[in-house]
Amino acid sequence: QVQLVESGGGLVKPGGSLRLSCSASGFTLSDFYMSWIRQAPGKGLEWVSYISSGSADTYYADSVKGRFTISRDNAKNSLDLQINSLRVDDTAVYYCVRGHSYVYWWGQGALVTVSS
Amino acid sequence: EIVLTQSPGTLSLSPGERATLSCRASQTVSSNYLAWYQQKPGQAPRLLIYGASNRATGIPDRFSGSGSGTDFTLTITRLEPEDFAVYFCQHYVSTPFTFGPGTKVDI
Image (cartoon, rainbow over all chains, first blue to last red; front, side, top):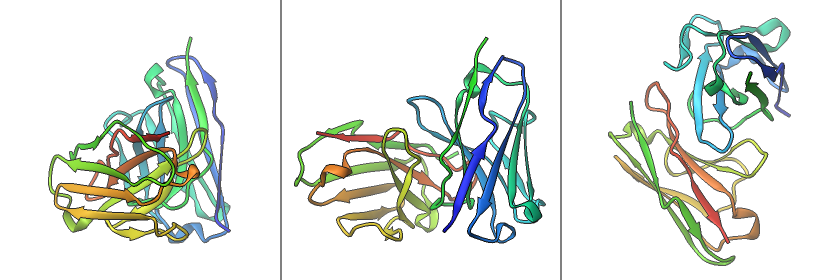
């Protein structure tokens, strides 16, 4: 059974940094693109970033470009999102998902709250 | 960037009724690269439909998707109590992949 488990969320001050991690199981991570999608409280969904199976192809939403870095370690079955220069409007639940088109498999989400 | 607009914002119906949700794109969604999701409070979205009309694995046949070009529809025949939720459409034509703002189906 596919499982995606996020960790690393929490409360951070504006300007701070955070690293989200996603542990993947039940499938061969190296076979798939992986993505992060976020949802601000009570709001819609935003595709934040994706990374190809070999890490050569990455995408970042304009709203996070230059501040977020996606990476993966296929050997460790993990996906990371390094978030720097956090802003209040980065407050959201961050979902680790498999794929980069439509999404069948989602993690449970990690809440990142940016507040002073 | 393809902007998706969903209507209505809220749909108030009763169990057993039919729900018709609309998703309109600002540009043609080529290859019908459009998906629909259901989301309940505190849960991750659940994929219902991909390719505009293909039901995802495990999705009951009361859910159906249709449309092409810029106009797409999600239909739920005979609403069940567990279908009351928020529904989002999403395109995956090219980046940025965007989502509609959602339609809430409530009692």
